Structures are given as structure tokens and as C-alpha cells.
Image 1 (cartoon, rainbow, N blue to C red):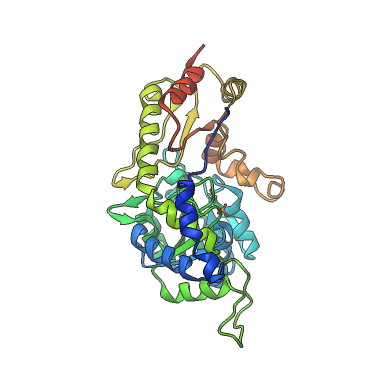
Image 2: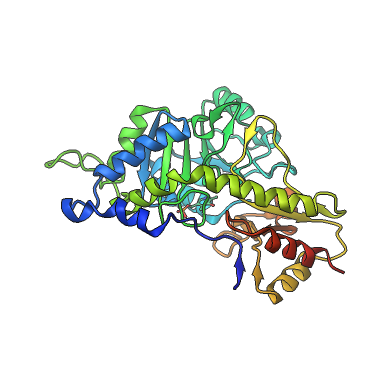
Length: 363
Ligand SMILES: *Cc1c(COP(=O)(O)O)cnc(C)c1O
């Protein structure tokens, strides 16, 4: 069987059936009913955050967040991410301004931000890419100094904590994705975590057409509600999340045992004060005796499919490349040309990791 870069975590079949069975009695299968409410409460506690607003996917959560804040102008962000981050900014009527990344963590380079700030800058949208934590302290300082919002694309960072606090408690708000490929999934799904109760109330309206009670609509919203089946999947997966993360950690440690002292292969840094979710296993192939393309080809021949996340940069995609120059983010450009995400999911076996590393290392 093929080994893909990831495999969705799902609970035992019977457990899910038991969770959804009551929906056949209530016939209330969407519009924020009991499963939705239950998942919200469980997530607030698990993620150590104050408020959460659930969405049908992470992308619409992010777009809704940018709209809810009433932002106008430029948003400083990075091109080393999934296109969703950049699309959300553009779809919200804002202009992305690309900042380079830190060569060790691949998160926004806080030393390059201030030179990009103009009188049009309204926010920074930083990405906790691969679950690596951005320099949240420096970002908070910049946010206060210039009176701009600090927002996080935390799509990769479910279950991550920093200095003993849930990662979603930093900044003005954070978007999480619960897509099937992420560490925690609700099939498709997403959320905004924020300490701002007023923002949460606006998000609740936006995701439900802007409706406020049966006879009035107070803002021009969309439909981005999480349904009861998605929430049920979330409730089941959350019961197993510790087990998923522990198993991922074991896979990461196995990879490390094979790859940690190889010339020309650079691994993720161990970040201080961070509890990881072991979401991704990116390697940077730089000065190794084989090129990235050759490794990909050799793995593909054995039915193993790593992914070049994130290559190309979002600023290199056809829909953006006329407008942006990737030469302005040289570190991001260079990393994107050398990065490779190896397969990683909870039940990837020791022997499979051994095989993958064997192929990478063989001459
Ligand atoms: C997955 C992802 C998203 C979008 O989330 P969806 O739930 O798939 O809509 C946004 N940003 C990043 C970095 C992602 O990986």
C-alpha cells in the first residue's frame, strides 16, 4: 500500500456511530446544536483559551476573522505557507505584504517586519508553520508599538503550547484548521480562538449570514457553520488526541534517530518552552549528495509520497506572481526550494520510517 504524507485520524467506527445516533432522534443536524456546543466547551478547556468560534473550515474562519475586525489596508504576512493564508487576506479586500522568514523556524522574521510597516498597515498575520511557534513576544511588542492587530494562522498548531499557555491564547486571535489532514480533525472544520468576547460575538453572526434573531440581519455575513456531524467527529477525535500526539512523537523520534546527524540534511529545531504536537516532519536538503528531486523520485518509485510543503511560495503561484517578487523574501525562497515533508501520522510503523530513511540515505 502507498505511504502518503499523511493519513486522517479517525476514531473506532462504533464510537462515531454511537456519537451521531442521537441526531436521528433530534433531527437537528446543523445550526449550532448540542454537538456543536459540547465541542466548543471541550475545546476551550483542551486548548486553554477563553473563547472559540467554530467554522465549517479553517479558511472561512480566517477570512471571517479579517472581516470581523473591519480591517483595511495592508497585512504583513509570509509567503511560506499554504495559499489559504494569502487568499484570505485578498478575499477580505486587503493587500498582503510579504515578509521574509526566520531560517531556523520558518516563521515570520520579526527583525524584517518594521521596515515593511507603512501608514496603511493594519495587521500582521503570522503563521505557526509546522506548529513551530512564532516569536510571539516580539510580535506583541510590534503590535502595541504601531497599534496594529497581531493575528495567527495556527492551522498547524492544534495542541501546541508555549510557556505553559495554549498557543491560541497569544495575539488578538488565532485561526485553527480541523481539516482531515491536520493533527486534530472534524472531517473539515476550523475555529477562531480569541480572548475578545465581542469579536467572538461578531464571528458567530458572520458565520450565520449576519442573522441576529428571527427577524433581523445586522451584517452582511456568509454561511460557514460547522454541522453536528463534523462536531461529533471532533468530540470523538478529541477523546483520542493525547494518543494521536504521543504516537506522532514516537514517529518523529524514530526519524530523528536515523536523520539527526546526516551532513546536508537539516531537521526542525527543538524550540524552548514549546510543547509540540509533532504535526509535520520537514527536512531541508542542503548540501546533501542527492538533490531533493532525486530523493522524491526514489521514494515515489517505492510508492512513498512525501510533499514539498511549501513549494512554490504563495507569491510564486500563477495568481500572485505578476504582483510580487519572491526575490524580496530570499530566505523563504531558498527554504522552499530545499524543503521536503516526510510522511507522518500516528500509526506509521517503525519499519516504514526505517524504509523511508533507508531510501533517502542510500547511495
Ligand atoms: C490547512 C491550512 C489552512 C486552511 O484550513 P482549511 O481547514 O483546510 O480550510 C490555512 N492555512 C494553513 C497554513 C493550512 O495548512
